[in-house]
Every structure is written in C-alpha cells, then in structure tokens.
Amino acid sequence: MIKKLLSIPKWKFFAGASFALLGQHIYDCLYNTEIEVFYQNTTCNKDLLSKCPNIRGHFNPSIWSMNNIFGLFYVTLVEHQMVPLQKREMVTLKDGGQVALDWKINDPKNVVLVLHGLTGGGDCNYIKDTLERLYNAGYTAVCFNNRGVGFTNLSTPQYHNHGDPSDMMEIIDLIKQRYPEATLQCVAISIGANLAAKYAGITKEKCAFKSIVCIANPFDLLACFENLDRCISNGLLNKHLDVMNACFDEHNIDIKKVLEAKTPYEFDHYFTRQLQKFESVEQMYRANSSINYIKDITVPTLFINTKNDPLIPWKFVPIQLHRHMPNLIFALTQKGGHIEWYSETNLVTVKRWIMDPTLDYLNYFRDLPIDKWQQYLQQPKI
Figure 1 (cartoon, helix red, strand yellow):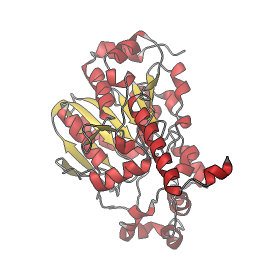
Figure 2: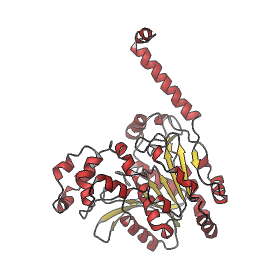
Figure 3: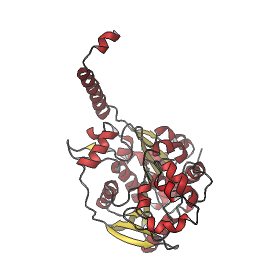
C-alpha cells in the first residue's frame, strides 16, 4: 500500500489534495455556516435577538476566505483602496499629545465611536468601510486614531497604549460636549475592542456608551502573544524617531535593540514595557488585557469572534461569562479570518459581512426607549 502511494506522480497527489481542500471549502461556505451564539435566555435578550437576524443566522464566507493566504491576497492585490471621504480633525490632548478623529457626519443625535486595531487607523479599508456603513445607516461615525497611528504625527514622546483608556476618555468628553443630546455607541475592532471592553469594565455604571460591539477582541494579550508575535511592530516607531528620541535616555531604552526587534514581544520588551514602567512584558500584557475587566461591564455588549482567527484562538474567548452576565452576548462564526469576514457579492466583489450583525445590534439599542434600556441594565445576574 505504501509503495503504491509513493509511486503516484507528484502532480496527481497535489491535484487530489487541492481538490479535497476545495471541496472542504465549498462545504464550509455552503453548509458549515451556522453562527454559535452564547447568551442568557432572558426576555430582554430574546427580544433583542429576534430583531437581530444577522447575529443568530449564518455567515457564508467568500472564496477569498478559503484560508488566510487567500484573504491576504485579496486585501493586497484585488481589493481596491477605498477613497477616504471622511473629514479629519486633529485634537490636542491635555498633556500636549496629538490624536486624529476621522468624521462621517450624519445624524448628530446618534454617534458611534470607532476604535481601530493595532497598526491601522482611518487610513485602512476596514475602518473606511466601517465608517461608510455607519454613515449610510444614519449615524455620525468617528474613528479615534491613537497617537502615531493613521498618519498622525507624534507631538510628545508618548506612544499609544491600547491598555490605557485615558486618551479615549478625553475624546468621549469632547464628543459629549459637542453633541450633548446624542446617544453614543461604540464599534471596536481587534486591539481596539480590548480597549473598549477594559474601559467599560473600569467605568462600570458610568460607561458613556449605550451599547458596545467588540469585533475580534483578543481578551487575554498574554495568552495570545505567541500568535500576535507574527506581526512586526517597530514600523510605527521608525516614523516618529525624531520625537521619541527624547524619551530613550529618560527611560534607559536601548534604541538599537528596539529597532532590531523581530517580533512584537521583543519590541515590547526593549521599548513598550519600559515606557509604561512595567518590570516584564508578561506583567504589561496582563495589566493591559481586558479579560479581567469584562466581569464588571454593565452596558449591553456584543462580542464577535471567529474560529479560524490566525491571531486570536477562539478558545480564549470567555464565553462562559454569559452564564452570569445577561448583558453580554458572544457570537462565534466558523470562518472569518482576523477582521475580514468577507462575504461574496459576486466572484470578484466581496463585502465585509461583519457590519451586518453590528448594525443589527446598534440599531436595536438606538431605537430602544430609555426605560426599556434601563430594564435591560437591571436584569439580575445569576
């Protein structure tokens, strides 16, 4: 038997394997599409999910989501760079730091704050698409670009920190001052979702958001660091060396080792942890993770993750928390990549499906009367 297998021409072997993989992918696209949803079966949640068909339905992935390489190929070679139609506003923070807000202004009474991922802000297609979809749904949407992200220049030697919500809280105050009558909600993606969840857990009943959608939240940065280690982080630092030089001597940072770092872990060891005054990278990851703050979230929050995320293994999603917290809903798709969730419209054109359940959720709480929202918050924990 083994001799017969070894005698098969290589081209036939690879052709057979390719057809098998293609068949598996077709099966996944057509049949293995059910979304697993974890929630307490309360009256409020049943009403919510009855009006959010895209949360409890199916996700049919595009052919471009066959694997992560196909997704990367689509993003880099096929997907057209969206034209940024949003309005950019530069904001100076209390400590002199500078951040950027990308606005798509529609209804001033319904505002959605968008938080981006690790390295891509308002200049990236996934953020532009998010802002566009929110705007078309009637919302005023604004992306908060962290310090040094999205072509934002650093004005102080203070790098962005996705575990510290201080800058975001200043932006929330700005939005509330500018739109005092508005309902404020949040869509947070990847490491931005980690920041939103941590903020909501810290502020508890004082959280400014009526509801939050967390997309591809890594939850536990320490547990995920081996997968996150595949990315390179020092590209952002290279853009701001002239400003950051001021802090290297102050914090005893070896700039040569920082620039030679091959992984985010090395980068964080030689640079970020010292800037944030942590004794170790592990201590910093634990402190910046949202996992220990989710139990204190009081506002309605939807977490959406996928089982084939190359950076965030789905086993790290704390779905068991729904048993004790009726305000949390966890949704797991079978496929979707990290933040792509491509769904076919035709063979070449795809859309990012993730905004379908996101808008279902936001629209529900936008239209929910304040007394009904208060009832939702007051659901007893088990």
